[in-house]
Length: 191
Image 1 (tube, rainbow, N blue to C red):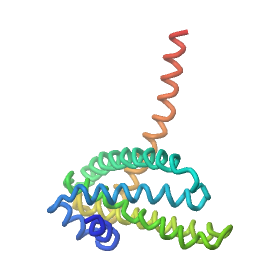
Image 2: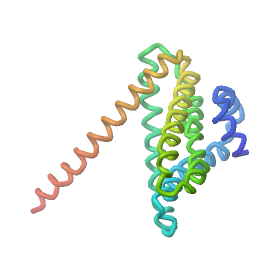
Image 3: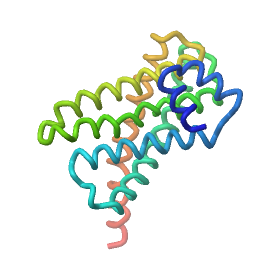
Image 4: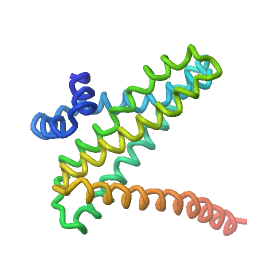
């Protein structure tokens, strides 16, 4: 079941999105989502030679899954907002399935890393462009998901994606600045 969600999200994202809306395979999509996140962390561990730290790999994977879930939530909020500004009609169910499955190309990072490891010190020569290609694939899958879920053209869906990413990064930046400042202000009130 997970292999169908992965293969569909990788090679036929529009058909997989329609199939997911009908069948709603939560376990398969969640499994593909978790596998994609773990693949990203494991590929970085393999490239940087940190394979002797399994507990750290688990902790980093959990942190990455939480960040990925937060990013997915923010992406859905901002995609819905900007899509409605551009005249799209957003189907929240389809948007959830599409954004969740658009991370599926990240599962290709581990096989790509394993192919690059025999190069030794030159592994980055293959790994870096390959990782960039996978991120572009994720970008394309997310644009397709937004286009399909919000009934927008690909150009408008790309605009929605970039506006959503920009808003999310601005939100992350503001939170990273304001939360510590608020914490310091509260500590100053105590002392």
